[in-house]
Image 1 (tube, rainbow, N blue to C red):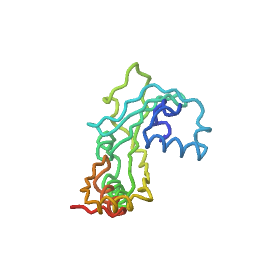
Image 2: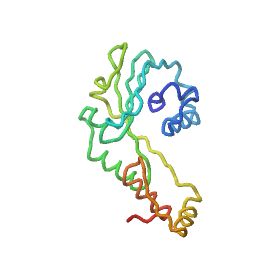
Image 3: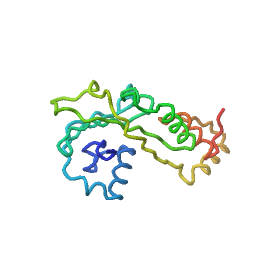
Image 4: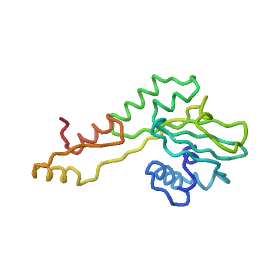
Length: 178
């Protein structure tokens, strides 16, 4: 399902989203892509910074699948409530504290194909799981930061990651938090 959640343009090698690219590469390496058969891409909603998620709609095996990927806290709001949220939140926190980027995947089968898809369709989703990514710092990052510090250059960190992941990466490269 993670592979189905990636936009069609990525399968043509045209996009640069590292999360979707990692899903495609892993799917290709594991042989998943060859076994899927025909996929018809119906719609894609790019990452919405307010909803902290994106969605993809595909026709696969004669069913219309709506798949949502994004930040755990936001995606679970779109899910049915038969999920152990405390357990899942603890799992997300544990993975984040260990420096992993965690993306939540959820979805549902729609009753029929529509002419247009909107976020309003992203309700009563089933939580499919967590996608876990490792984005290790470059090997020479600590060395580069040490050189900048010796030059008395004040460093600031701006990140799109959550705070826990950012703090873990800072610790790995020796960036002091003030």
